[in-house]
Amino acid sequence: MPMKLTRKEQEMLNGTCGPGMQAAMEVVVKMGELYGAERLLPVQNAHIDAAAYTTIWEAGTDFLEYLVACGARVAVPTTINPVSRDIENWRNLGISEEFAMKSKRIEEAYLALGVIPTWTCAPYQSTNVPRFGEIVSWSESNAVNYVNSVIGARAERLPDLMDVCCAVTGRVPAYGMYLDENRKGELLFVLEGFDDSWFRDTVDYAVLGYHVGEIAVNRVPVIAGLPAGTTADQLKAFSAAAASGGAICLFHALGLTPEATSLEAVCPDPRIVETHRVTPDDLRDTRKRLDTAAGEHVDMVLLGCPHLSADELGQLARLLQDQKVAAGTELWLMTSDTQYQLARRAGNAQILEEAGALITRDTCLMEIDEGNGRWRGKTLVTNSGKAAQYAPAINGVRIHMAAMEGCVRAAVTGVIPRRR
Ligand code: F3S
Image 1: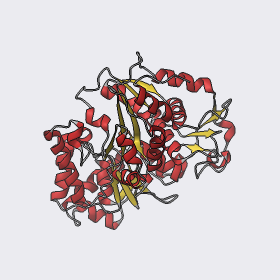
Image 2 (image 1 turned 60 degrees about the vertical axis):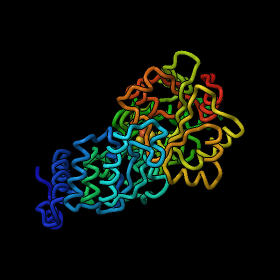
Image 3 (image 1 turned 90 degrees about the vertical axis):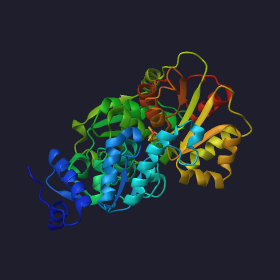
Image 4 (image 1 turned 180 degrees about the horizontal axis):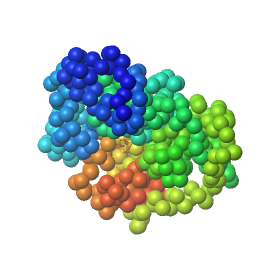
């Protein structure tokens, strides 16, 4: 069914606002009709996922350059995901000139479109922090889950390149999580039997997120029993893992996330909600299924999926102080340039680099490696549920999940840390 457009939106679609706006509006309207939306919503800000070359390839790059050639620009403040190279240090990562230049084309197109060059999958750590209830146009699965759930803004998982069109038009179709009726909790997870040793480290949040995602799949889970002191970084780990484990784009953590002031607030009739008990054994089982490492040797340790915050870089510096990464093992820390500069000011980036860690900025190592097979068959230790889900499929690695302290131990000893 055709959508109802305002006069301004009709002009955008007719080409009155230029061919770039018209092309973007055609995509937004067609996709909106596909989703069954009746109208468009104006957005306050945007975050674009479609930044890695291995996500949009040549055709996507051509589309961006077409928009630029038509004079299009983003209509609202817009941040953007990691690109396919560390913009300053790509040569140190063994990236070929040819591949780096493909990324550069994309970066230049986005700069011409007017995006804020954050090149991060965790824009909510700085630069792009929407208000509660704000309608935003975001993509990147962890970021959408976080902005919906932890911030309480309203976002849907926009497909790549449609996210660009939404940023250019400043409009999204009114569907999915933009609508009140779709934001209610649909199933309840009650944590039981966890003592104080649990949920201190982000890895427990990552494993719980993955576990919840696997059961909830595309529905809205409510979680009861997380500690009151849960941090933003821990909710970041949960958001990423739940999104990759089961395409979750909104969750409610009772007493923690802003819409979940009580069970009744998110589940108008809690009696009819499907309930799941979650015990330490459930999380041990989930973690065992994610762990595919065979031997004892560790080839790589990866933290920063999603990108590390300055605080996490500080925690890592304290753990790694006066130690060295083992020969034959690499320690990779992924972050944004913004968080990296904060870590430098604090002296933490220097500690980490002197210990032998490679801190990458602006990029995602898994996406860079996608398809070139250099990681195939190697053992990777990580605290990220999203990396544990994607890296075996995309990069062919074997995974061992560990807490941050265990990741550091794996890096300095080159040996798989003992399991809980
Ligand atoms: Fe970010 Fe790459 Fe992980 S984009 S969330 S570091 S897969």
